Length: 100
Image (cartoon, rainbow, N blue to C red; front, side):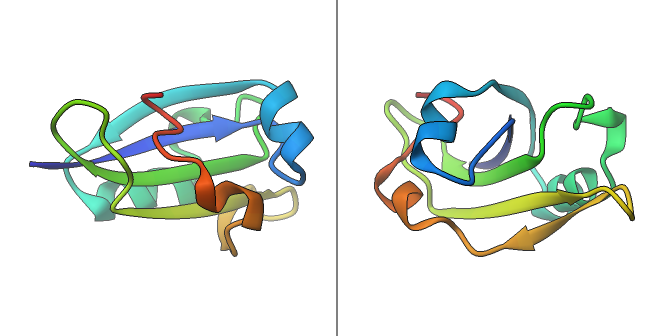
């Protein structure tokens, strides 16, 4: 079984921001489509006036899961939506951002 985890981050613009700023796992879906729609449209106000970045990780069940795929999004103030951005290089060696 695959699940799609959503984690919000205050700052992913640098490695320091990743380690020192706020983050919060807000939920998961069994459907990639539902997870992507939730993020891009800021459903449930997942931004919470704080989280400029969202990470969507695809994982399978089990112990110490690692991402099968990961997408990073950044919030756009003008549109009120999240848009995909390239994954920062420093994140490529970090797995299980949501579960740990």
